[in-house]
Image (cartoon, rainbow, N blue to C red; front, side):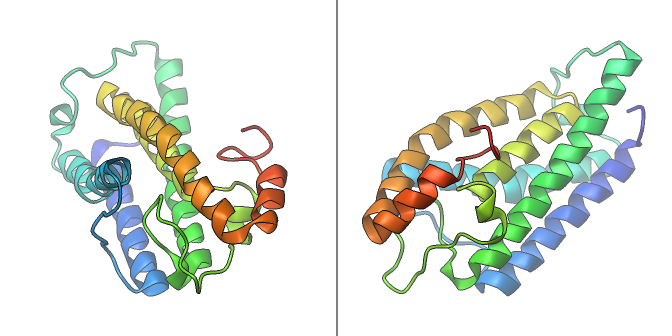
Length: 204
Protein backbone atom coordinates (compact mmCIF):
# COMPACT_ATOMS: atom_id res chain seq x y z
CA UNK A 1 0.00 0.00 0.00
CA UNK A 2 1.39 3.38 -1.02
CA UNK A 3 -1.20 5.88 0.20
CA UNK A 4 -2.96 4.22 3.13
CA UNK A 5 -1.86 1.43 5.39
CA UNK A 6 -3.80 -1.83 5.52
CA UNK A 7 -5.31 -1.13 8.93
CA UNK A 8 -6.74 2.23 7.82
CA UNK A 9 -8.27 0.71 4.70
CA UNK A 10 -9.79 -2.09 6.76
CA UNK A 11 -11.32 0.38 9.20
CA UNK A 12 -12.73 2.46 6.31
CA UNK A 13 -14.34 -0.67 4.82
CA UNK A 14 -15.90 -1.65 8.16
CA UNK A 15 -17.25 1.89 8.68
CA UNK A 16 -18.78 1.93 5.18
CA UNK A 17 -20.32 -1.49 5.66
CA UNK A 18 -21.68 -0.56 9.09
CA UNK A 19 -23.18 2.61 7.63
CA UNK A 20 -24.84 0.57 4.88
CA UNK A 21 -26.32 -1.93 7.34
CA UNK A 22 -27.75 0.88 9.50
CA UNK A 23 -29.19 2.68 6.47
CA UNK A 24 -30.80 -0.51 5.17
CA UNK A 25 -32.38 -1.27 8.54
CA UNK A 26 -33.75 2.24 8.95
CA UNK A 27 -34.89 2.66 5.34
CA UNK A 28 -36.32 -0.76 4.54
CA UNK A 29 -37.08 -2.20 7.98
CA UNK A 30 -34.81 -5.23 7.55
CA UNK A 31 -31.17 -6.19 7.11
CA UNK A 32 -31.32 -9.57 5.35
CA UNK A 33 -34.02 -11.07 3.12
CA UNK A 34 -33.87 -14.70 2.02
CA UNK A 35 -33.50 -15.03 -1.76
CA UNK A 36 -36.53 -16.51 -3.52
CA UNK A 37 -37.76 -16.90 -7.09
CA UNK A 38 -36.06 -18.51 -10.05
CA UNK A 39 -32.63 -20.11 -9.92
CA UNK A 40 -31.07 -17.00 -11.46
CA UNK A 41 -32.68 -14.73 -8.86
CA UNK A 42 -31.63 -16.95 -5.96
CA UNK A 43 -28.09 -17.31 -7.29
CA UNK A 44 -27.59 -13.60 -7.94
CA UNK A 45 -29.08 -12.43 -4.67
CA UNK A 46 -27.25 -15.10 -2.64
CA UNK A 47 -23.97 -14.11 -4.29
CA UNK A 48 -24.68 -10.45 -3.52
CA UNK A 49 -25.46 -11.13 0.15
CA UNK A 50 -22.36 -13.31 0.49
CA UNK A 51 -20.15 -10.64 -1.08
CA UNK A 52 -21.48 -7.74 0.99
CA UNK A 53 -22.05 -9.44 4.33
CA UNK A 54 -19.28 -12.07 4.41
CA UNK A 55 -16.49 -11.25 1.95
CA UNK A 56 -16.33 -7.50 2.66
CA UNK A 57 -16.17 -7.69 6.47
CA UNK A 58 -13.75 -10.63 6.29
CA UNK A 59 -11.46 -8.65 3.97
CA UNK A 60 -11.68 -5.65 6.32
CA UNK A 61 -10.75 -7.78 9.35
CA UNK A 62 -7.81 -9.36 7.51
CA UNK A 63 -6.58 -5.89 6.55
CA UNK A 64 -6.91 -4.57 10.11
CA UNK A 65 -5.01 -7.56 11.51
CA UNK A 66 -2.25 -7.24 8.92
CA UNK A 67 -3.14 -10.41 7.03
CA UNK A 68 -3.96 -8.89 3.64
CA UNK A 69 -2.08 -11.69 1.89
CA UNK A 70 -4.80 -14.12 2.94
CA UNK A 71 -7.38 -12.17 0.92
CA UNK A 72 -5.79 -13.08 -2.37
CA UNK A 73 -2.70 -15.30 -2.62
CA UNK A 74 -2.56 -14.43 -6.36
CA UNK A 75 -2.09 -10.73 -5.69
CA UNK A 76 -1.58 -8.52 -8.77
CA UNK A 77 2.12 -7.86 -9.29
CA UNK A 78 1.97 -4.09 -9.84
CA UNK A 79 5.57 -2.94 -9.51
CA UNK A 80 5.34 0.60 -10.92
CA UNK A 81 4.72 2.94 -7.93
CA UNK A 82 2.81 5.46 -10.05
CA UNK A 83 0.43 2.81 -11.39
CA UNK A 84 -0.05 1.28 -7.96
CA UNK A 85 -0.89 4.68 -6.46
CA UNK A 86 -3.33 5.44 -9.29
CA UNK A 87 -5.03 2.08 -8.76
CA UNK A 88 -5.29 2.69 -5.01
CA UNK A 89 -6.83 6.14 -5.52
CA UNK A 90 -9.26 4.89 -8.17
CA UNK A 91 -10.12 1.88 -6.04
CA UNK A 92 -10.81 3.92 -2.92
CA UNK A 93 -12.97 6.41 -4.85
CA UNK A 94 -14.96 3.64 -6.57
CA UNK A 95 -15.49 1.74 -3.31
CA UNK A 96 -16.72 4.81 -1.42
CA UNK A 97 -18.96 5.84 -4.33
CA UNK A 98 -20.39 2.32 -4.45
CA UNK A 99 -21.32 2.24 -0.77
CA UNK A 100 -22.77 5.76 -0.82
CA UNK A 101 -24.73 5.06 -4.01
CA UNK A 102 -26.24 1.91 -2.52
CA UNK A 103 -27.20 3.75 0.67
CA UNK A 104 -28.79 6.56 -1.37
CA UNK A 105 -30.79 4.07 -3.44
CA UNK A 106 -32.01 2.27 -0.31
CA UNK A 107 -33.14 5.55 1.24
CA UNK A 108 -35.07 6.46 -1.91
CA UNK A 109 -36.70 3.02 -2.16
CA UNK A 110 -37.57 2.74 1.52
CA UNK A 111 -40.22 0.08 2.19
CA UNK A 112 -40.57 -0.54 -1.56
CA UNK A 113 -37.19 -2.31 -1.51
CA UNK A 114 -37.08 -5.92 -2.69
CA UNK A 115 -34.27 -8.25 -3.67
CA UNK A 116 -33.27 -7.88 -7.31
CA UNK A 117 -35.41 -9.43 -10.01
CA UNK A 118 -38.65 -9.64 -8.04
CA UNK A 119 -41.73 -8.13 -9.66
CA UNK A 120 -43.08 -4.97 -8.00
CA UNK A 121 -45.89 -5.42 -5.48
CA UNK A 122 -49.27 -3.93 -6.33
CA UNK A 123 -48.79 -1.19 -3.74
CA UNK A 124 -45.33 -0.19 -5.03
CA UNK A 125 -44.84 2.94 -7.10
CA UNK A 126 -42.21 3.44 -9.78
CA UNK A 127 -39.12 5.04 -8.22
CA UNK A 128 -37.45 7.62 -10.46
CA UNK A 129 -35.96 9.99 -7.88
CA UNK A 130 -32.50 10.31 -6.36
CA UNK A 131 -29.98 7.97 -8.02
CA UNK A 132 -32.79 6.56 -10.15
CA UNK A 133 -32.66 9.82 -12.09
CA UNK A 134 -29.09 8.92 -13.07
CA UNK A 135 -29.35 5.18 -13.79
CA UNK A 136 -32.15 2.63 -13.78
CA UNK A 137 -30.28 0.18 -11.52
CA UNK A 138 -28.18 2.17 -9.06
CA UNK A 139 -27.76 -0.70 -6.61
CA UNK A 140 -26.28 -2.87 -9.36
CA UNK A 141 -24.02 0.01 -10.34
CA UNK A 142 -23.05 0.21 -6.66
CA UNK A 143 -21.98 -3.43 -6.29
CA UNK A 144 -20.01 -3.16 -9.53
CA UNK A 145 -18.26 -0.08 -8.18
CA UNK A 146 -17.50 -1.79 -4.87
CA UNK A 147 -16.12 -4.99 -6.41
CA UNK A 148 -14.06 -3.19 -9.06
CA UNK A 149 -12.95 -0.63 -6.48
CA UNK A 150 -11.69 -3.31 -4.11
CA UNK A 151 -9.94 -5.07 -7.00
CA UNK A 152 -8.02 -1.86 -7.74
CA UNK A 153 -7.52 -0.80 -4.13
CA UNK A 154 -6.13 -4.17 -3.04
CA UNK A 155 -4.74 -5.07 -6.49
CA UNK A 156 -6.61 -8.34 -6.13
CA UNK A 157 -7.40 -10.84 -8.87
CA UNK A 158 -10.01 -12.40 -6.56
CA UNK A 159 -12.03 -9.17 -6.35
CA UNK A 160 -11.63 -8.66 -10.09
CA UNK A 161 -13.15 -12.14 -10.52
CA UNK A 162 -16.04 -11.04 -8.28
CA UNK A 163 -16.56 -8.03 -10.56
CA UNK A 164 -16.68 -10.29 -13.64
CA UNK A 165 -19.12 -12.68 -11.93
CA UNK A 166 -21.36 -9.73 -11.11
CA UNK A 167 -21.29 -8.64 -14.77
CA UNK A 168 -22.36 -12.12 -15.90
CA UNK A 169 -25.11 -12.49 -13.29
CA UNK A 170 -26.51 -8.99 -13.81
CA UNK A 171 -26.56 -9.41 -17.59
CA UNK A 172 -29.10 -12.19 -17.00
CA UNK A 173 -30.97 -10.60 -14.10
CA UNK A 174 -31.58 -7.10 -15.46
CA UNK A 175 -33.73 -8.18 -18.45
CA UNK A 176 -35.89 -10.30 -16.13
CA UNK A 177 -36.30 -7.42 -13.69
CA UNK A 178 -37.08 -4.91 -16.42
CA UNK A 179 -39.69 -7.21 -17.97
CA UNK A 180 -41.48 -7.27 -14.61
CA UNK A 181 -41.24 -3.49 -14.27
CA UNK A 182 -42.56 -3.01 -17.80
CA UNK A 183 -45.50 -5.29 -17.10
CA UNK A 184 -46.26 -3.55 -13.80
CA UNK A 185 -45.91 0.08 -14.91
CA UNK A 186 -46.45 0.00 -18.67
CA UNK A 187 -45.78 3.16 -20.65
CA UNK A 188 -44.37 5.26 -17.77
CA UNK A 189 -41.64 2.67 -17.31
CA UNK A 190 -41.06 2.46 -21.05
CA UNK A 191 -40.52 6.22 -21.21
CA UNK A 192 -38.25 6.10 -18.16
CA UNK A 193 -36.27 3.24 -19.69
CA UNK A 194 -35.83 5.19 -22.91
CA UNK A 195 -34.72 8.31 -21.04
CA UNK A 196 -32.35 6.92 -18.38
CA UNK A 197 -29.31 4.68 -18.92
CA UNK A 198 -29.03 1.27 -17.31
CA UNK A 199 -25.85 1.32 -15.20
CA UNK A 200 -23.58 4.22 -16.17
CA UNK A 201 -25.03 7.75 -16.46
CA UNK A 202 -25.15 9.03 -20.07
CA UNK A 203 -23.17 6.00 -21.28
CA UNK A 204 -24.79 2.60 -20.74
